[in-house]
Length: 128
Image (cartoon, rainbow, N blue to C red):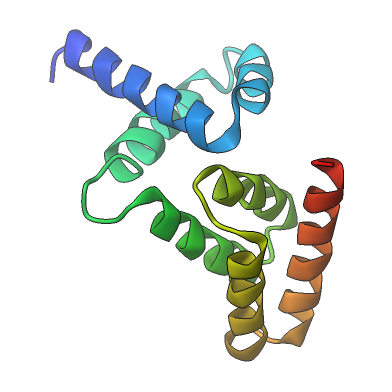
């Protein structure tokens, strides 16, 4: 793969990342990139946000639903809040998010759902 193709994938991934997570969040994160984190951010924007998020096999809304469930199961509260915002940006309603978290309660356990509902409440309140 040549540098031009890699840059196109990186740029497409960064565009998707901004669309899903919001430009303010991504711009702040990108401003904090340093020599230590540069290669990781390159991997993140190229492979995660382009090569996976831009695949045609699933719409972004479905990818968001998957992320919400997986992040709950893994107990990744910070990333969950971020992806609740992303799910809203990808067209999920609060009712759909609630249904995801009810499903989480059954398959991942009530404690995981307690955290998920608390995170959602914080995100929803911050958007008012």
